[in-house]
Length: 433
View 1 (tube, rainbow, N blue to C red):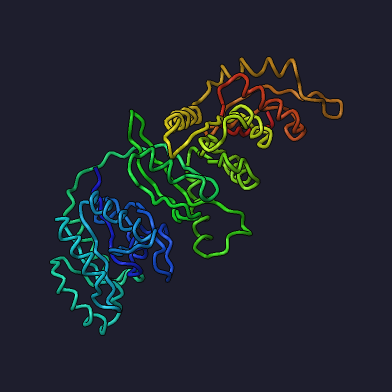
View 2: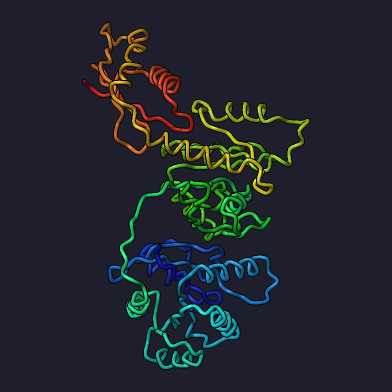
């Protein structure tokens, strides 16, 4: 297993800036506002030929009654528990504060290897001021400026010196993202599946800000589960932080293999749900529609069958998607979601033999040929599945530019009728023979 290094500290000392510096990408949202980071965010760092996992955490505030700060405090403690070593970030511009002392006491109790990173040391005056942090009693103390990278090399040298040089066998795991509007239950489903409070959950819409990656490994299934920020309509995105959160969610959608599109059963499928659905279809992602909070629907007023019919009417023409009705809070049918998502993933990467594809489709085309072009017959001679991550098919014919959309839809329907492609958008290309 890779070593895990957690970055902790009080709010607004530069933890996320250091995290982005170590993983060499802008994964954590950085802002001057205190408390931007809420959940634990994971990334990979490579230094001196050694790989390890870095965790960014929210700012630690002891004994706070604030709903977010109390939840962040729990997240920080979880990060410390699962980490092999800790980077404790402090701010030289403010000196040692009571919050710093509280974090230091927590780390001493953990018995973990601690690297004290005195941040924002970017001139000789601050270099002198930073010396007071030796009084915290941590042997591994480093003066850094995470925004410029100064001193981070020495810090990484010290961290990697405690990591054994063991080759790690990497294999690509399926990536399954949970996307949807704010407050539909995405983080609740993530926590329920993982069996721990991996992500912060509150009744406040917009609680999740970053895309949170977790490894699910239960009941013989292993994949990366990505919880995302809620995607609102552009007109309703008013804060810079929420703008970046939405960008993170869309980027998570881009990197995913399968999208669990979560819909609130109480409000039903809305225009914004349709927009999110179209985003996934346009990017040819595997799709599972998850209707959450089904326990709040009175059974005498609605049935799953009626609800499913309404959904499929709205998502036409591509309506060949699995729809699962769950209650993430009450753990109802949540493992059906996992099984269905893995099934869609396996079919998404499945290759149909070219001979079998032609044996099935060409006789159908011969019986129902495309309309002629200026008196000339359009002849489709050969079909081939393209080597892409999603189902894509090339049809070779004499007039590829003259195939009408209606016939393309006919071909797609026949492919779906003869091959198991549920939950998978299809790409069809006509090429000159």
